[in-house]
Image (cartoon, rainbow, N blue to C red):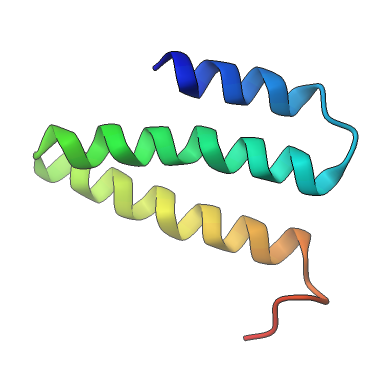
Length: 68
C-alpha cells in the first residue's frame, strides 16, 4: 500500500505526461495486485475493472500512438 500512495503522489508532481502516466500505472498495478490477492469475487472483479479502465485511459491519453 505504501507503493500505491508513493506512486500516486509522485505522479502528481510530474509535468511530463508520459512520466505521469507511468507513475499512475504503478499505482494502478498495486490496486490490481491487492484485488487479485484477495481471492474473492469482488476483488477479482475489481481487478478486472481496474485493468480495463486503465487500458482505456492510456488509449485516451495517447490517441495517435495506439490504434485499435
